[in-house]
Image 1 (cartoon, rainbow, N blue to C red):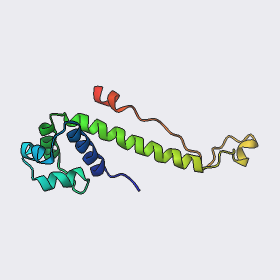
Image 2: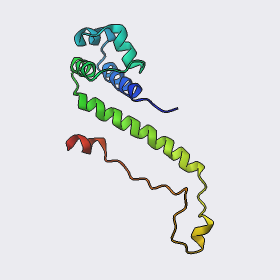
Image 3: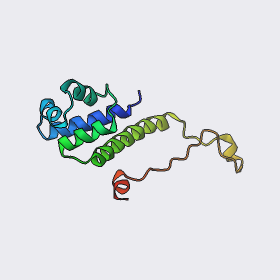
Image 4: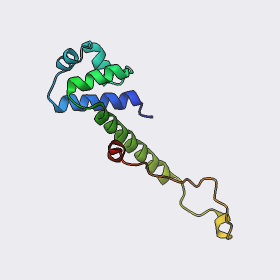
Length: 124
């Protein structure tokens, strides 16, 4: 099952709030958003607008960019883990065509180009 962006954002916001030992009520009051809606955002059930995300981040005293970097890293980690599982399932034997000195590339060959780190993107 794929991790949705709204779920990754909610996870990041919840981790930040919990690490600050703050309650949903405190953050919802500070962000001027209903307690129920903030809870839905944290659980990944509601898609938060950019304005709402900015208000929540301001209430948490964390830059929106830091939350987005955290989300990016989380999604990258999940994608990498899923890709590793898939790569393990693919046989590692060379295709017969490659043993004949052919210059063609097998159809199931995948080229993986690593993404730049979130920190490098944030510094740019």
